[in-house]
Length: 154
Image 1 (cartoon, rainbow, N blue to C red):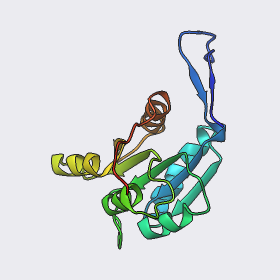
Image 2: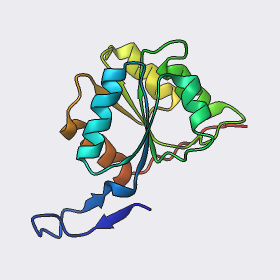
Image 3: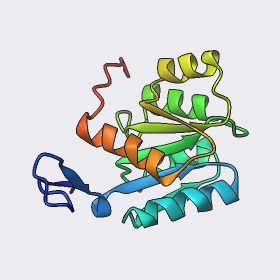
Image 4: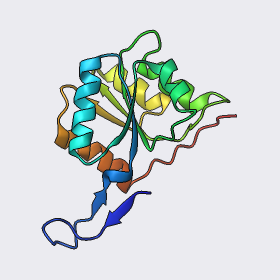
């Protein structure tokens, strides 16, 4: 269960901080070194419940037994890339969690890729190389404004 602490570390009550320790994150990335980097960043943010999948099909299978609060996926993977993975996650009749928020990591930030990512249901995009601050900002944005995905999944 995610909790919102109304007092920030500095004691300022205007700035709300999230307790991220209860978040469950799934990283879907074909590069082992990138998975390790993302996992280390998440652990540094206090998130210890992290699972990893090397590509989309493995991630869909993993989601049958792991309830992720947020998925962080790469765009370019094989055999199922990030766009195909998110499309299946959002629209498959047997999708384990079609409404889970998705952050897509990519080094391919061309306009067409961004449009396609939004079209299939990606909630946030993050250009590589990533940093802890930028990843945290995407996670906070999702937590402050949970996505309202209006998709026909029937």
